[in-house]
Image (cartoon, rainbow, N blue to C red; front, side, top):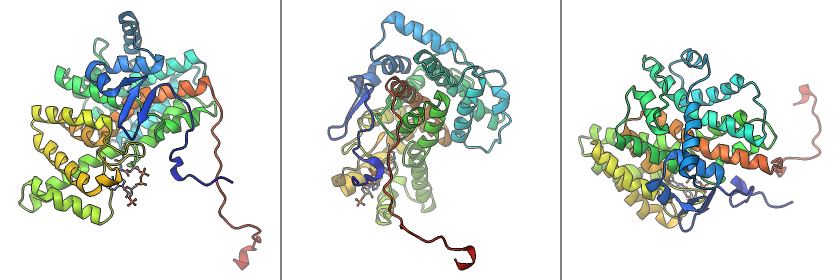
Length: 385
Ligand SMILES: CC(C)(COP(=O)(O)OP(=O)(O)OC[C@H]1O[C@@H](n2cnc3c(N)ncnc32)[C@H](O)[C@@H]1OP(=O)(O)O)[C@@H](O)C(=O)NCCC(=O)NCCS
């Protein structure tokens, strides 16, 4: 029996031609193009096309894809009412997971897994998740649903449906970049989950629903919310002590490290240097924070990064994508519990690409567990236990 590999670290369980990661050198590429290049020059729509077709689109191809994408912005009939019947206290990730699952019930042929059907379903889920999130958030704030606008990009349309007004170009671009950076990332936990589910020849909706469940964990996509909570705790601590936030960062972080607590937004299973998405986001977060009056938050983050480099840098623990995306989302004006749904909205593109990739050359995932319990145990009668 081979040794158990806890957490499957280093195990290669699938082939992909979507994203390449080199954790030692801090490289992330989508179909060979560096993430930095894409964040600077691409859009979320074009990046999705790239991931799903393994090539950049021509002008005509992008136009056709965008038109088809926007034609899918609307929620199925009855969905708005269903969302508006949920408890207002529900957490958006639970709402998103439940409603993506519910989308299957509006599909006349939900289990079709041929390439054309799977792609159609993937596009429809990708295009409607912004409406699910925006609809729920407005409902819990006592505001009416804002229908999507097909003349707007994915990023603009989401922020429009959330806030009832078209965002500025700078805010829409900031958000679009976050979407590009989070779109795919090798065989991460939620992507693996989606491939495991589809490998049973289940259906696209089930695979995406499972992936959303995986993503919300604090060790995965939920970390961006925890980063923001930590920044809030630092500010509250400073206030309670009548100090400047910058003066309490060091004791706060050192105190947590002394208690062997994890600092959210740091560390990565694959990257042993700074996450290349974090490198880009760091500069970007500073700019958007400065533009929106949130520079103090960026400065606290930067100080945490310095302390962590000094204390645990030698262990290969550096900021990951969640660390500076927290400041960016906050600066854009997004509420804390929408951070992880934003991650899901973007990663949907990667999950779907992987689901289709898995279906194209499927073999059921079925690893083994090493049994470490007793053998030959007698069945004790109830009275003798
Ligand atoms: C992402 C993560 C789960 C990867 O974990 P992993 O590959 O299983 O790494 P391990 O849990 O084995 O940690 C290895 C060592 O680094 C330490 N470490 C890892 N992440 C740390 C963090 N965020 N803060 C402090 N120490 C950390 C561990 O305590 C451990 O130290 P030890 O060897 O002295 O016991 C982990 O780094 C983490 O929990 N990070 C915080 C959550 C987060 O930001 N997640 C988003 C990922 S994109």
